[in-house]
Length: 173
Image (cartoon, rainbow, N blue to C red; front, side):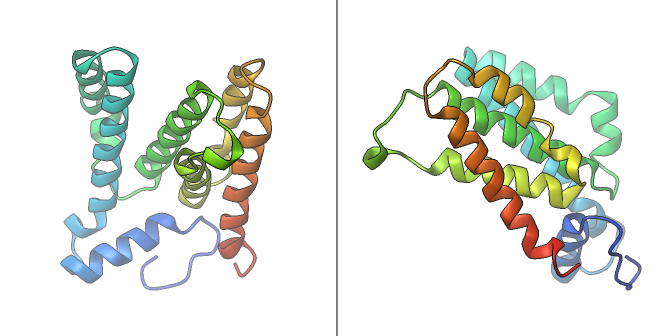
């Protein structure tokens, strides 16, 4: 932050801004670009989720409702970690929903795509803002109760994998 290490805050927004600065130079647009991209990414996730719950019109309503919400318009264009946190929490919730809603598969034919996305969602949210990014775990665990026998273990394993990814930053910091 201002060319000095800042260890009191999670680093993801600074890492994203550093990449943006390297590509576009140090300017206001480059500083805000990660928040803009995270806001657009959240809208895309909501669109995809809406499509899967109903149809394209539901997805479009969900995405546009989010994108044009006053708070989203404000947070999506400033250089803070809030838009990244919202993106990763939405990604976590969507990936968890996909895992819970998917039919049980044998271990040999299991697709680990959504497991990976869920772990990255936990890790990205934590690296964006901190422990509040782990809040989607509780509703996922509540929703998963009784759906299938191994889903609680899968969610817990993905949570632990996400935390392990965070430790690569947290231990040295």
